[in-house]
Amino acid sequence: MLPVVNAFQAEDAYQKVTVEVTDDRRRYSKDTTLEESLRSLLGLKMATSGCPVLSELKSMAVHHLPFASNDEFIMRSVSHYLLQQYLAKRNHKEPDWELKGLVERNQRLQLVNQALWQRIHSVCEGDSNLKALLNFFSMASSVSFSLESQLRKLEAKMKGDGAD
Image (cartoon, rainbow, N blue to C red; front, side, top):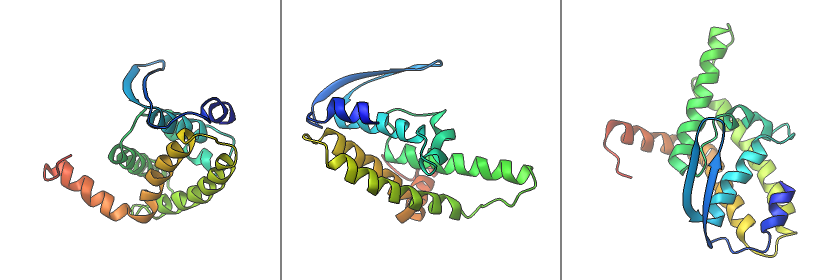
């Protein structure tokens, strides 16, 4: 993360940028803010880091969705977790259909996020990294604090009752 934080530490979070993300399967391009770009990049870097808590997200990083909205993040997090539970059941382990482990994992992530925030806050001159991390952290904390309401919102959208 440090090279990214250093490269953008003095930048304005809301400056407009055009970002292109290319992987082996596809290319994403978006005219957006530096903050949204950094949120996506830092989230991917954190998930693929050597941190034992953040590495719990490593399997999600394989299917990273750049510039994901909060709804997309919740959908991907819950879907990924439920797939893990299905595979656990298939391998004769006890699945967690109540999503308690998902909430617990995101509570652990919040502790790491707070420590990261303090470290990055101490070296940043501008607000780009800080706003990107705050946005990422708020998405992750929505799983811990308001998962049920997030699921109700997604349920309404899946039924066609919810508007974007």
